Length: 81
Image (tube, rainbow, N blue to C red; front, side):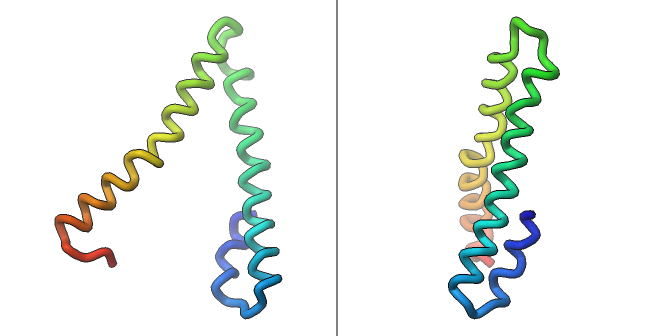
């Protein structure tokens, strides 16, 4: 479903843009529910919350590390593109 986001720049209609973004986001919401069900299936019964917390921590690292890496690249090269 996230493939639909690739069609957003190629249309002129605001309605179609919003519709395509809606479809793409609904696909990520469906995938997220399956990812959050995984610790309950894989982890031992007494450590499901620990595994889920670790999964959440690691998945949020991109939000913290991404801007640091981007600013380092921009600072080193002096160019964003």
